[in-house]
Image (cartoon, rainbow, N blue to C red; front, side, top):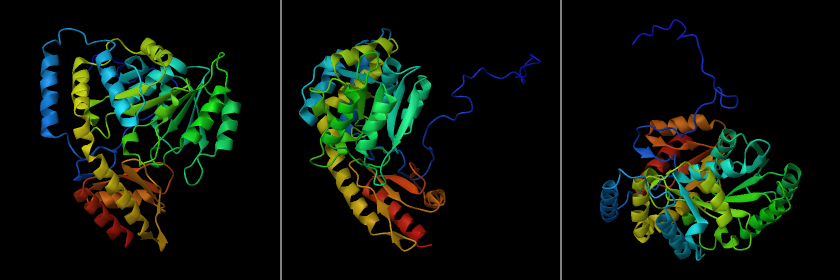
Length: 382
């Protein structure tokens, strides 16, 4: 359709400063046989879980002329029950918040506790979206570089917290893209430093992002254990990964009731649809079944780490980060994009993430891992 407005082609849009010229975040979505770039669970929900979801969604559909339960206490109770079973930490429904993926939970956090004149702090390399949450809420973003082995320099971290006085501090355990987990002692050190910050008379908040927590190795703790003694700590989780529910879009948070109540102020009305709540509750009712593949993914991950460390590039062994997640970070390559493209030519899609020279591969099915290994060996031998 041709516009009759003579200025239609010449007038721009008043895009605000800060996002002008920016591109939307997102991993490549390509139609290839082996999708190993977005840390999805490679195993689809089994038929009995699908049937349960269909039943619950059908029930919800009969009431779609009405708004959903705005405070979704039944879902929050189910999430609290799951955490009690998974991490042996008892929480009330009022200690839980949920949204459309942990991305929306993070946005709620910075809407409530960030904003102009406030700073959010992260430890890079880490999840790239944190800086975008900050940008979108007009929160200043600051970074502390991790050590070469991707651990935290705690002395430098605490000094930076004292200097910058951030309102919100993001810790990621297991970290994305490196897969490395934090100890409770490390988290406590950051939480203690945050308590010495004064933001309008209140301490800084420490957000421990545990999106991949269900994949952690035996003995690796959850920061949920700190909630009772550190009221400035919150823990975020997701059902996208271990629950094989990436398409369901349900993320959640555990924190003090006061913290959750602040998020309730900034959330949009009825932000969780009746369908989303029904899907999540049905999945939680089958958590043992859905998490049944977690041990297998852990075993595949540990085998992949071992195998990668046996490979070489330019006569040097590959460097492989220890992983408590469902992905593995490996390098270093002179031209990682060239290797990424070469793997793609074999139908294997991995992720260019983190510092130059590194790639991240999601742990897939045995068939997918065989395809990845075969393609990588062929390309490294070129």
